[in-house]
Image: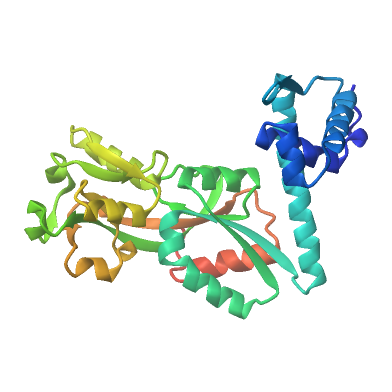
Length: 303
């Protein structure tokens, strides 16, 4: 049986370098180490694990199944060690609490910058680590403990999460100024389904909302292009590659002067809620509880 105490962090870092670059020589160059030092570290890991971790080829190396397994675990271990070092360093410089906040793109673009600036102004000894993720990933992270708090769209299943209302936003149809729909003040989503759409990437809560609405209308959603951000969607729509649905306040005002046109959606789901959630298991630290209360106190409503 492998003894956990025999693993050396520096050897794991060297192994990650080799896995990343697919070559002992390149790993040595990027790690500023000698080739012999790299080879020695890998040999020590293979001795500790009693497994062959790499297959050598003339132009590089390939991970064995054992090597791929070690890569997954080593990545998690070193990430946790780095987090530990950063947090301990922060405590030494006056930080007294950390909050890991994951949030979807809509909240990061529209609301969180100002809200977090106000919170940190009132709580200068708290550090917030913010990660932008998809709503489904956020809920999973909150439930598993990878995130202390999460901000996500209201159409995301969130069983096991204590949810409160964070903010509401309005979804609008965005079209080029020259598009036939640009003359309308308001339209129903079903009326747009003959058009080709620019949508967000698979997994986004907004795309799921659009697909659900198209299914309810008995029509397919014609996705021509998918992008990772609202800014990318605006640029594609501006170029005439399709129409799109985005939160109203994510559209930069300058684009609406002579390039794009916003059309209101008459569907009830166009007015959506963003929720903030913590693990329903409880046991929140004081700093997490403070941020949870701060971000939900605008409405004071339970979701």
